[in-house]
Amino acid sequence: MTSTTATRPSAAPAIRLTQARVIASEWVKLRSLRSTTYTLAAAAAIVIGLGLLFCSFYVARWGLLSAADRASLNPVEVSLRGVVLAQLATGTLGILLITGEYATGMIRATVSAVPRRLPVLWAKLAVFAVVATVICVTATITVFLSAQAIFSIKHVGVSLADPGVLRVVIGAGLYLGLIGLLGMALGFIVRSTAGGITILFAILLILPVLADILPSDWARHIVPYLPSVAGQAIMQLRPGPYSLAPWTGFALLAGYTAAAVVVAAVLFRRRDA
Image (tube, rainbow, N blue to C red):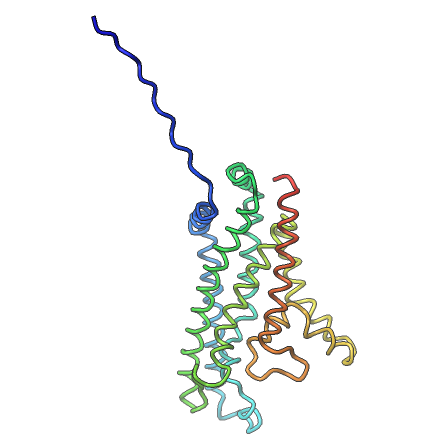
């Protein structure tokens, strides 16, 4: 008589939680959201569309411009005029990627899978930084090359090999990516879409306007150090007398963003999801 011994199924091997796996998970989330694709596409379209529109406007009115206007024309900065509006799109997207998870409750599932929480923060920041920066740098290079082709009709175009031009064009894309990270940090801090967008708009648009009405001896000590003004120094081919040096201004904006990320990290660890 033979006896049969029941075999118990072996336990599934435990999957080790690593930062790389958290990053892969956040990448899946990011590319599965239609709003991400639409908003980044809108940001790129704004950069390219407005840049080409302004360049075409200058060329069309070339015969009506004075000699002084022609001499002061900066083909690089004109081609990048759309960056000022596109920053609102990238910053808003950074906010929405976080506040959307809080609104739907998905953040609770995320922190249940990654109880230590901070790897989630680093993964979200890293994935969004890479995607947004690559798209924005591609957009700024595209609009620059296309705009110079338009300006070449009047023989006023410049090339990437000219002094400072490559820094301005690449820096514009880096600036947009950094604004997106600032928006993401604000999303973690306030956890409210309306609140985050309000704060972002105040930082990028309202503070510079308010600072400009200050007495000139005050403004020159305050305006260059505002986040958006400091960051946009990298996009200036010929900085003004009170502007920060290009990379100094960009580093200051990076410092503001890093401070916001630190606050976001502390609050993300301490507060309930």
